[in-house]
Image (cartoon, rainbow, N blue to C red; front, side, top):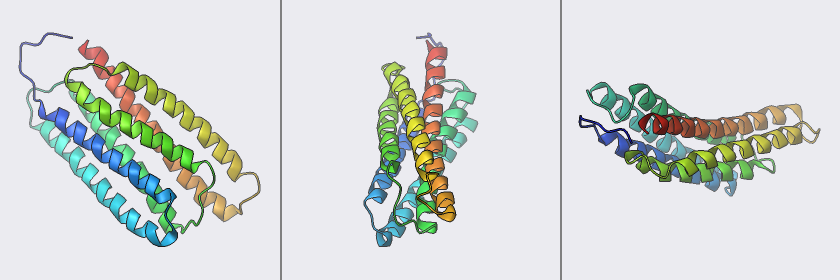
Length: 206
């Protein structure tokens, strides 16, 4: 690790960890949505919206801290990128839940549960990895596994699209369901962006 002669602002580590923990909360709400009937989904959506607002607050706090800090733990552009990508994850998860409720989707296609399971695992790994930014240790397996999960999410997404276009659903239902599975895929991509940023930071700090 590179030797530094100057102290660093360390509160960023705690804020990134808090942001990642909030994403775990969001992933659990996605899992909860799978087993919920239509009457319970609106309440889950409200809790997801609250979690997304908490994520926005966490992101703004990081940006505020960054703008008021002379010394940062790593490059400013990487802090912006990491905070923004963490925020994107919550935005996509909240959007998926909101679409299910707004479109009054009664039954999600088989395979969506696999998408959400991948997101839940990526959320756990991300939350476990964020505290390790402080020491830049035990991070390699994290970004390798998240990239593997994103590849798995791509395969699931393609299978879901094939299922949607097999003639079983009417055209309007296809449009609704495709938006949901596409947004969940974007969440998986955002997890990969976080992992790639962490890798970039680790390489720079080595």
